[in-house]
Amino acid sequence: MEVTVVGEDQYVWPLCLRANRLQVSYHFGTQMRPGALPLFVTHTQGRGLFTASRNSVRVSLWQSAGLCRYAGLALEDYLVICSALGIIYHIALLRNPWLKEEDLLHNGPPECLFTSRDLKQEYAFPLEHMFICPSCVAFFASLEAGSELETLTQVMATIRLKRGKVQDEVRQNSPGH
Picture 1 (tube, one colour):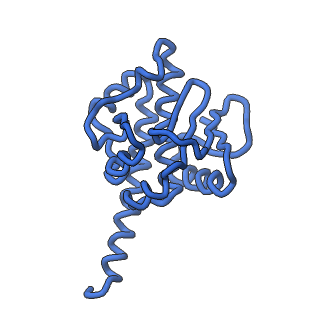
Picture 2 (cartoon, helix red, strand yellow):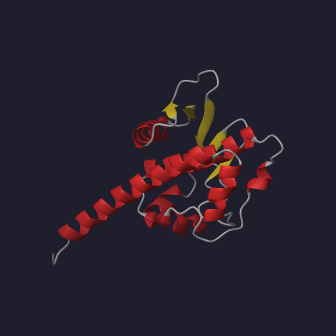
């Protein structure tokens, strides 16, 4: 799938480079091509990490610095995770014409990235743990978005591994070691 990222260059280029390194299911680029999914990187205030429709995905940078700091994520990793979450919603909506956006709201466990929250700050814990609950896995698989969910799972595993290596290096370089 082609994904065209639209927004400020300082966010768009790092997102495209990181996304294309972390996975091969989608190609993130900046040139609009026929059939490409528009993905907008915005500063829009809201309570979610992203919004998705049958036409596009929007990822919000609002409060991202604090979320990244708490979760130990680089901004480009945060953007890739939010983009992948939005793509899953987009695919589910696209492949299931009877589905409405509000049908995707999830009142699940607090650590699940798909659980709806009242405040954006409440995503800090799920971003730190990068967990998708079993009911979401089954739900999105039933909506024909299983391969997109697998891509997200692989991306999160790679980011966890990278984060673990960075944390180990910090421990090794701290006084007393």
